[in-house]
Length: 176
Image (cartoon, rainbow, N blue to C red; front, side, top):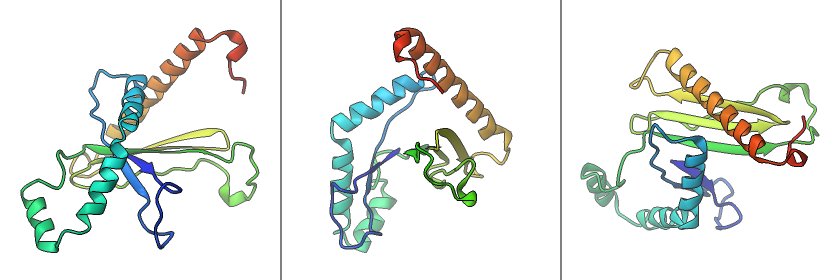
């Protein structure tokens, strides 16, 4: 499940109201980060985030007993998600924030629940990428499990970056 920010696309009375939707992407163990990225953009291209947004809006009109029945009969979600991934994007690339308490890596991850046992998040703050994975205790209590996932994630990113640099003309390479 990938949250989608709809601020600026929808209006609400309060700025603290829900402005998010999501796209659900099924991921296979053999797929690369690039494959998954393509799936996310394909789901966005089909407007799945809008379908989920309107389903949420319609769901708000249902009575409490109807909602309970939908949950009881597994009609509230077509399938449970293993987890949620969110990328907060690139923050302060020009390094204009210089308060000491803001320096260093910034970490976050979507919440984990029994029906959504993995929360993975990334954010780039001042040109430094931070990756976080948390696992629900029903999935694992061993810190080595999510640490291994992080290491695999880093290797996948390194492979993708190496592949992109190999395919791009030298004039397009990024410099640090």
